[in-house]
Length: 401
Ligand code: NAD
Image 1 (cartoon, rainbow, N blue to C red):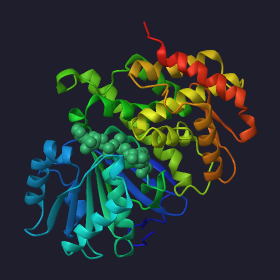
Image 2 (image 1 turned 90 degrees about the vertical axis):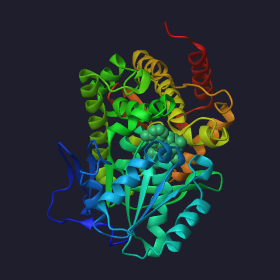
Image 3 (image 1 turned 90 degrees about the horizontal axis):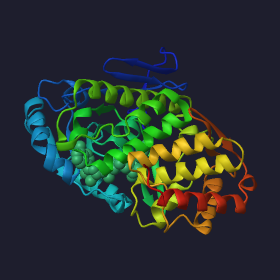
């Protein structure tokens, strides 16, 4: 990781502090970064992006959809707030199939052709894929340069935007290559979410449900009352109460995630509660040829983990039922017939065990707002896994009243 990018503020106590404009994180090793949560990021009067660029040469990368929807405002902002010739902009493909080393090399090649040196900055404007690819490119370009994330999806804001991970898929494995590379700035404007398709909103809600299940029963109850949060017909502005609710959900989820990440920013500790939903899901995603999106695969994994918790006697029926019901009411899948086979799910358990230092560290809910780890492969007997998958298949077919 580049020392240039890490902002070490030794005098701040370790932890996460919150203010009206966002969050500051100081890790125990002194790594410090800020995550802004603010509206009007592309308003030429808004200083956040211009201050983050700090007069440096900037190469901006944006996904095609975000370019179509927000590209004009982005260009107008850059023209208004930077010197002529200070920035260039490239549209780069998105989609899991483009989250590759080749994409990283392409980003680096475009930056080099634009004359970006190690004092320059890369800017990623888009969802998690653009952020992961550009972030990884920035971590290796000239041995590490600054990058800025402008996160335009719900997953981007509650998950990618608050952490320090970058990476690409390789060797048939999700996020096989990557780096821990904190962004110089992470700008999160909820107004971007108003153009986001419902499927993408649901994927973000899956990550929010994850945080609620493991840490916050109140957040879970709020989602139960409003499973349609962030979705509004006709793309109109939310009414005031809805806006407040969404701000509460967004803020709470971002803060919980940062508090969980803070003591373990570089994942030296491999048992992580935030890996709830991330044991089976990599195989659901890759073996399914990325038919399901990341958040959808996470939902399937959470439902399976809830059933395992029930069958292993770690959670009661009601907890399992509430987790699965909420996911279904949000419109998320809880079963994927193509990949939820005993063989593939056993393979997923073994792959996680391998990745996590020969411990399973499977996160399961024990109550709403509480979770525990199942540590050994032998703790998930084959017949229990098969029974859980059968229950899940039945859940997948059920229609809620
Ligand atoms: P994505 O980046 O594929 O974006 C989804 C789609 O929405 C894209 O087509 C994009 O162009 C479009 N889009 C983006 N913003 C939009 C807007 N405001 N309006 C309309 N359309 C918009 O998907 P994602 O869910 O943002 O990210 C998923 C990726 O993030 C996965 O690859 C996952 O592995 C990764 N991820 C990384 C981390 C991390 O810590 N680095 C954490 C979670 C997920």
